Structure formats: C-alpha cells, structure tokens
Length: 300
Image 1 (cartoon, one colour):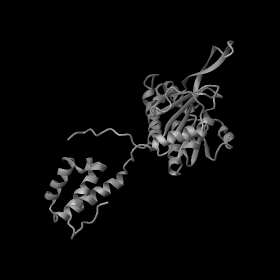
Image 2 (tube, rainbow, N blue to C red):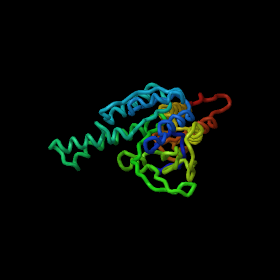
Image 3 (cartoon, helix red, strand yellow):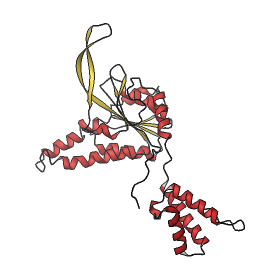
Image 4 (cartoon, helix red, strand yellow):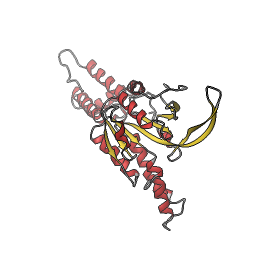
C-alpha cells in the first residue's frame, strides 16, 4: 500500500504578503485586493489608527494592536477574526511584531540580558512564538493579507528624460529572514505604487508590473477557487460509516464478507486512507449489487 497520493491542486485561502517602503501604498493596496476577494473584511491595525484613514475605499472592521507588539496578540486576533466569521483578514503590519517594542527582537534581547540565556540560546524561547504565529496565519480559515515594511535605500537612477535623480527603493522586508517564503504570493511595491512580484505560486503575475486593484483580488479569488474541493473530514467520516453499514446489511451482517468486498474496491486500503473517489466507487459497487426488487439504502 503506497503512502503517496496523486498530486492535485485544491481550493485554498489566500496567503499574500505586500512589502514596500513607507508611502508605497501597502494598506491601500491590501484593501483593494480584499474587495476583489469579496466577503467581510477585518483589519489588524498596528499603525496608530492609520487603518481608519482608508474607510472610504470599502467597508471593513478594524481592531488596534498597540505596544507591546507581542506576537501572541496577533495570534489571538487571527483566531478572533475566524470566530467572528470574517472572510478576509489584513494584518497591517507584520513588521511590528518583529522589530517594535515587545516584538520578537525585543523579547530576544531581554532574555539575552537577563543572565539566564546568551544571545544564541535566547532564540530557543523566541522562535517557538514566531512559529505559532506562522502556523496561525497558514492554517487560518480567512484569506490572509499581511503587509511588511521594507528596509529602504536611496539609489541614483536615470529617468525617462535622461536625467539622473535620487530614488528611494525598498529592500528586504522588516521581519525575520525567510518570513516571505511562508506566503503563496509576495507583491513588492515601490514608491510609484507599482508592483513587482518576488514570489508567485499562482504563476499569474510572473514578469508583470502593475498596480494593485480590486481586479487583482478577483483574479486571485478565481485561481483559489479553481482547485478541487477540500473534503470535509467530519462529512467524510460519516460517509465512510454509512457505506460500511450498507455493506454489512448487504452481506447479512458478515463482517468478513463485507471487508473482503470493500478491500477489493479500495485496493487494500483501510478506511482511514479512503479517498472521495474510493467512496464513490464503493457506492457504485453497492448500487450494482442491489437488485431491482430490493434497493439498498443509499449511503451518503
């Protein structure tokens, strides 16, 4: 019995990061995309109430996280958004729980200067908190859009008129190294509000430069919904039990005969490993076994 299964893309929730320097339009762009994703929108605002400034764009609800920016506040807010039935959650911004007061770097520094840990061993206490935050985002029932500040630098460029000018550019996001790899899509904004794409598992935006809009969100939603349905575990288990009872009934309660018939259809897989296709095949077998005078109850 193989432990592998056929690869298939399934329906999913969005995991999007938007990075950029101050003033590049991260919050505005996140709200534009959230509109295209449709549904109820919530925002975690760590920017001193600046999230309220965009209320004319669309309807959304907001909660504020103030210092200390303990990542566990973010985790609780993510769970609260799920429990309250929001469809889209904007985290604006994810940089605060890394670099600001009470964030992970601050936690690590306090541990390192406490005398109980050195600079290296302090990470053993901090990293699990970071991992729980990542897990909360990746497993959330909401679409997650997280903004992250980019470290900035100034470079000389030649403009379209052939003149040299100084331009501010964004570099790596302000978060722990590798955080951007946790997302399915990463949009990098510049100060002209133009997007370049540094990561795109959808392959929709590769090589494109564009501005963020509700259409961007709608395009992402179409892709997210184009995969196969994710089976509901509880529904799947109920259907398994119903089908097994139907086989028992067909073989007059003989467990051995029922199991032999089932194993022949599922190629020896136990019920724990039955797929939706297995269940459909089992139901078809039951329907074939039933005769015209005595139709078995359909297992659903």
